[in-house]
Length: 119
Image (cartoon, rainbow, N blue to C red; front, side, top):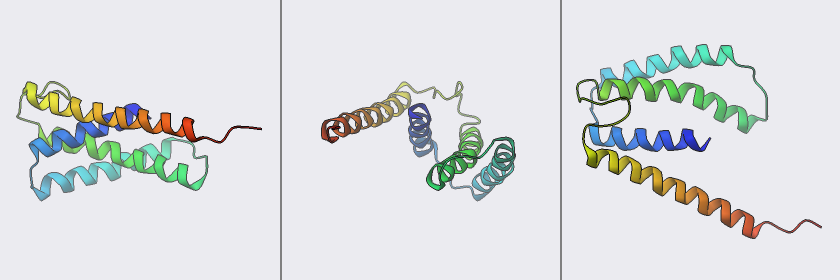
């Protein structure tokens, strides 16, 4: 799960740096998300509680949206996979991932520190 969150942070930083306001780009990405997300939902078994199910469905639709919008945003910008041609842009995305990972680690450490002792 952490890897998915880190990929989302990378995506958000790159979208912020390369944002286009073209409604066509975002509507096409949304349409791809619905088509691919529905195919993914139909291909997996459901299980778990309502909260877990919500996040599973959310991911199955969000991932295709992020992939298609990212592809459209960087189509002519000399990207290599998810890496920008600019070192500073990659550094900004890596910095965002580092901040998120540190926040997650801190949250886990605090949870352990304040967890009530078992009897």
